[in-house]
Image (cartoon, rainbow, N blue to C red; front, side):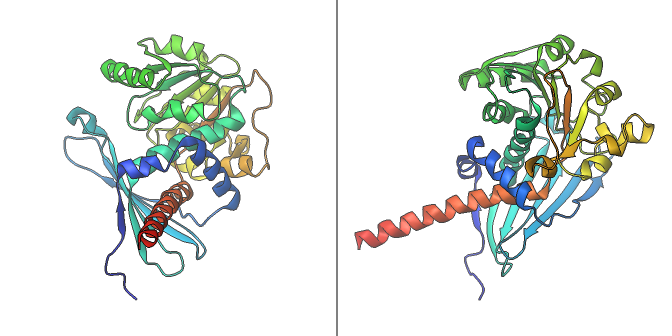
Length: 331
């Protein structure tokens, strides 16, 4: 039977309201324990004269007959100059048993929140328990979510923000202050890295921003932004000094922060200490000592998107049930 109404459209405010980090981080942990079918994403370069190469990404995932979905993403690096986000996306959630299209969900909010939550999930295994100083490198959509995500797993008290465009760092810091964080912008990246317990990078950099020589013992380095082999946020020294973890195996091929050191012999595959699957399932240990430098490189997983979209849909169903219940009580 065809549903004449088509999929429900769930906008940004409703998507955001369903995805507190206190709820989302545990949901992602459960998803990595359970697993899902998540093929390598389809990535298509969109070359346009006079602009940076854009990218079209398709990210499907499914869990048997229980859930099915696909995210469509476009990444246009030059959008910052136009006052636009670099990333736009929409998530299509389907019924896993019938394929019926259930909902079109704001994919930007899903992407940002599941990305920040995945970093916090990894950090719950890898950052020191007493880590309270966070440096955010970047000031875009995902960067704005990092402080509240990290605060869900660590006692974050001080936040510093660095960005290639200082005005954007200042604006993000002001917004974080409104949320109750002790936040400020910084123009001295080296000094800020040296003082931070957690360095979380969410940029589209193609050359290293964070140098390993700047990292003090006990720092956790979180690399989010690079998703192509030509993109780097940290240099070879950072990789060499750190105990390296990944979200999925795709990070080794897709992310320049690891693909380049692997190709150069700086890093060997057998030196990868674990993934979100092995960490969440207790198959590999996380941080081993207080002085260890840890590094987590993520490229994102369709499994994360599916789990996040499922949370939004659960809320939608509960709200609909409440409305129906109220209507019945009136009659």
